[in-house]
Image: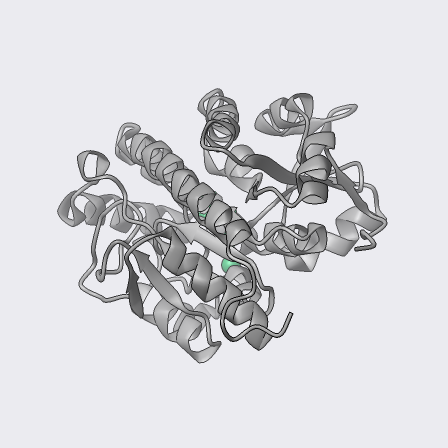
Length: 318
Ligand code: PSU
Ligand code: MN
């Protein structure tokens, strides 16, 4: 496959792709805008190590000086954790809208779920692990704030393993938008829809999956059917790390009030709410976030391995 000319694969990722061994994509917005320093850098390194220990190659994705890095270097990841790269150039949050601008103007940018999916697909990576996706924000019926992540899932064939939509969002409307756009929401070992910090929210997934092999079979079938768009695999936070909806709700109310009083809008709202939640909970949301993302990475590796082992399935023509 001819690779896009804006793409730089790390030697490890390049080698894995050449020999067809499993690769798992990781995003960089969680490093630059999702978690405080130095926790963000520690986590970014731990996630890569988990992928390696479990038998796949990690590809942390971001934009450095206008180049799409698929497999960022440790120096790049450390710089992103401090939000500066090269002569004090800031690291911006890059979603689909911002991607070409960042490349053409030689900027640095951390990629959101949407932008990471685009870059993963350019590199031929099928499975991506993260903590949470963007969704329909509360009050979207007037603000129209719907994350580009949802529309990316509708059009880019990358499987995203996450811990479900976060309760700062409007979860029922997020599910409606995913349904409208034909994105399957598959529960990893659960029929309940997990809601990021908690293991359920009263809603159900479209289908419960028994194991990674079932997930991989669905990915392969969607490839063979040539269906556009990705799959959302939702994996509940480990029981021991889950927070109860009762305690989360109070923090969310306060965080949303602060955002509204501060006039926070657009791409700043998600990082702002995450930061508020961390402060209001005295770091408990951070601890939960770290636990759930590691858990998601482990599941994504299993799916990526199973996907590489399953050749075209019974519907296949290849
Ligand atoms: N949810 C989290 N942590 C994050 C994000 C979401 O728990 O860091 C980031 C992801 O990169 C996601 C982005 O793609 O926020 C969504 O931003 P927006 O709502 O502006 O599309
Ligand atoms: Mn938004």
